[in-house]
Image (cartoon, rainbow, N blue to C red; front, side):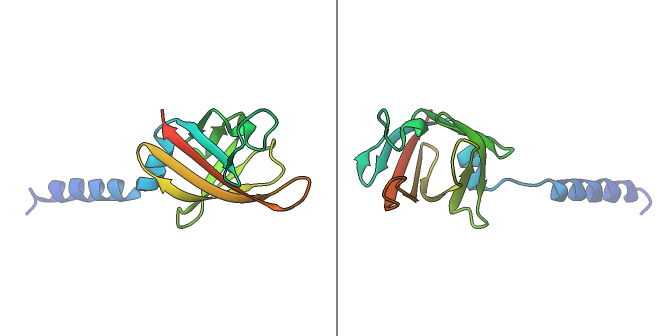
Length: 135
């Protein structure tokens, strides 16, 4: 029995260490793994990525870092999942409000998000759909 005591102590220590590590969810890994390249940026179903258009600054790459920081086109800021990991909130000093996006699709090679934002001039809602491909 005395010979088994060190084995039990080592096994218990390994269990404590393994349980204390915070594991990342599959969605977290899928989102933070690649750099995402904008594929389509639509506002009310129309391309809105051109000069002067509402999604122009989201054009390019998006990177969601493990620490909650990130780059989103030409924006730099922070991101967070909601509790159920069905939405992403993007915060940036360059944006006048937090952008809360619904995750329509998150796979190893594609990210599709949607949101509704107010038009700056008419205050009418703009339906946004942004799709990205893994780089």
